[in-house]
Length: 185
Picture 1: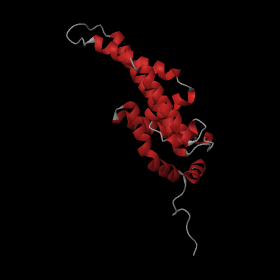
Picture 2 (picture 1 turned 135 degrees about the horizontal axis):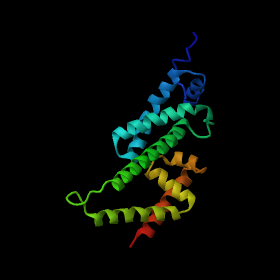
Picture 3 (picture 1 turned 90 degrees about the vertical axis):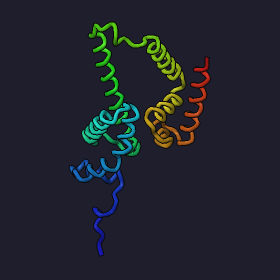
Picture 4 (picture 1 turned 90 degrees about the horizontal axis):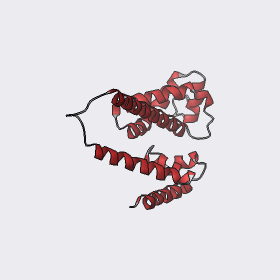
């Protein structure tokens, strides 16, 4: 009895090969398989489910448009998460820019004026964290950012920083410890 290989659960690598050959069903399987983690990554960055859904969809479109450039150095999941986090960050930048432009265009003073001092303190703290994070060694900075902002596993971070899973854990913990030290008053 010959087993039909299309009934077996194909690996991501096999599905990518099928997508490259124009198999739309393989593309759907990859989307179904990875949509949850891609959506959660986008939602973590954007903090808005509607925007995360848009970013997720756009990231899959970009991934399949660029599927021929996928070299397989990392898992498809890691590659698609990198695309998704870039897409979500780009969308966040565009939204912030639109808000800043709208605020610059608005000439509203009075009843709707908020407590400016709280906003200044918040922005100051955010800038302080960014500055301190930027001062960390590259592997620590990437490990902390990818873990906190993108929710990647240490295994995936290890692949991205060209290291082992254990080294990614160590870099993350040293980075967090150093951030705490630098941020203490």
